[in-house]
Image (cartoon, rainbow, N blue to C red; front, side, top):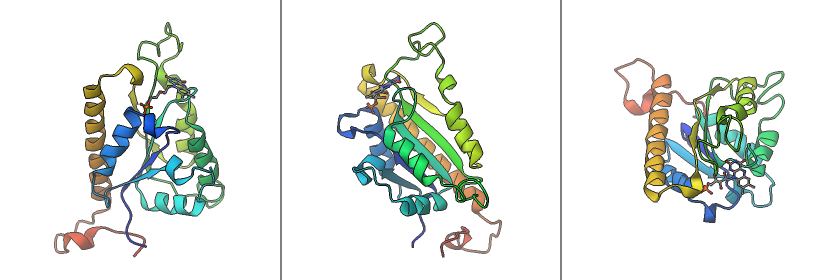
Length: 205
Ligand SMILES: Cc1cc2nc3c(=O)[nH]c(=O)nc-3n(C[C@H](O)[C@H](O)[C@H](O)COP(=O)(O)O)c2cc1C
């Protein structure tokens, strides 16, 4: 198997053809070098909800940062993303005895909401700040030994201007490149006499 990307973006949108935000972000991510950023569209890969657990675990094993990109649905993740968590983050692989496959990697949550930022206030329709809905994500990361990065939330997706969506997607892509760079910097051995292609320590060669 060839070397896979440093950053793995898992897109989970049940109706991506009608999406504005997540579709634009996924498209931007796909423009980045594939050895830095790999994009996997879960609803496209698994329309029948039968997840290839081995393929998902192989993609995860190679990545240093995992991105979950999805619209917020019922204050949580879309159903196939949840099934992915249930199936792929398996006992003895991601947690439990010997389950250290994800330890030390980073998890970056990138979501959009229909609700505005003011709706996510104590006095708003959603009655809680968005951060109040995050403990299950944070603890999932914690349990499997991943570092939960500061999430990126795009509020008010339905009413957003096109240029705001594009600016957001551009910043998202920049951050992905930074994360890919950080991933590389972490594994570059300080040996100035070896060529750049030989410096990166990989586990699949
Ligand atoms: C079944 C369903 C549940 C949703 N639940 C929420 C919710 O709990 N909070 C919220 O702010 N928006 C909710 N939304 C709105 C979506 O978050 C919004 O449509 C999405 O972020 C827009 O992104 P897109 O342009 O990529 O489709 C929900 C939408 C659907 C279809």
